[in-house]
Amino acid sequence: FASSDHADFGRTLFVCTHLHHGTENTELIESMLKRALGSNLLNAEEYEISRAEIRAADLRRKNELDILFSAVHVFEKNFDQVILAGDFNSSESSKAYTQVLFENYVDTYRSAHADATDPAYHGYTWDISEDRENIDYGHQFELPMKSFGREDVRELFNEYNDRKRRIDFIFLKNLEGRLKVLGSELLKFDAHGTSIMGSDHLAVLSQIGFAK
Image (cartoon, rainbow, N blue to C red; front, side):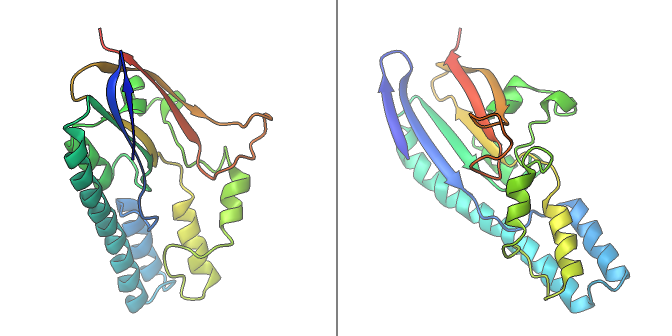
């Protein structure tokens, strides 16, 4: 948490978070697990363990947001707007993303680029084609799901976790209607013009200014 008090912009509460990195529950991973079960890549017990881990990860992120918002609700009455940003480890189709929008936050990138189907503005912050060095490096660490000591299972989960998606966001809660989103973009390269960055996530830069 941080705050600022500006003569023109008013009082702003800044909140930065990093939600649990466990595997996101989607229709895609459910279908992948079913195929793995059908092909005997996973046995029945391993299949159920994997599904339970995915559900537990979703629940943990929900609980983390519940705790976060309970604190924000205490502070926000003293502010004109709240900016919430961080690594949510959840895509736009996730329950966590919906939970944030339910709290009356605006996704600044999607506000600036409303058409999510436009390839120029998909906004993927997790994109192996843009940041292969860092994401490949991360493959040497433990997965957020059990691979049961088998490389073929590990490869299956790496394939799922490597899919392109937006999981890093800057949200604006405009309590007094003072501000609006002027623009938002991804920062894909570092100062040296290479694809080797200080993170395996791409950065989001949003411009926020006065509402007319």
